[in-house]
View 1 (cartoon, rainbow, N blue to C red):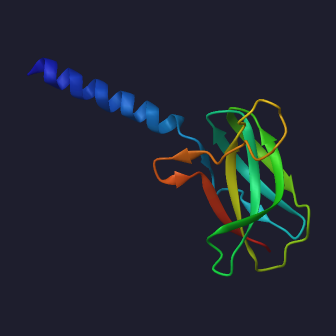
View 2 (view 1 turned 45 degrees about the vertical axis):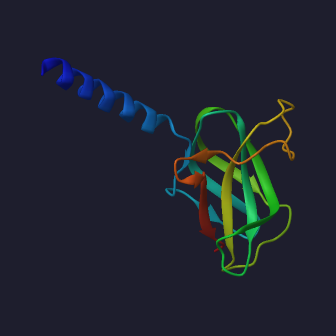
Length: 128
């Protein structure tokens, strides 16, 4: 009985550590203007990029990449992502975390979206 309780406690503790290690983009401080997106904090398992995608008419499906900024593994705060083209007020954008795929330190097609247990690590933001 004691061994089972100890095993359960260990499993729950390790599960909590694993959950804390997941990549994520916080909604706190997430803002978009016509020329940039600001991310208050991001946690990345690997070096990569915060990438801004335009969306389809529903505002939920990522489309063309319109901006990106590098992030290091670990936690980063106050990341600003300049947009390569102006976004319209009211438009929805998707901020997605991509992982460096070919160690060349340049955002390119080899840098695939980071995923968690729920799919791509992303947040939707509306342009103010």
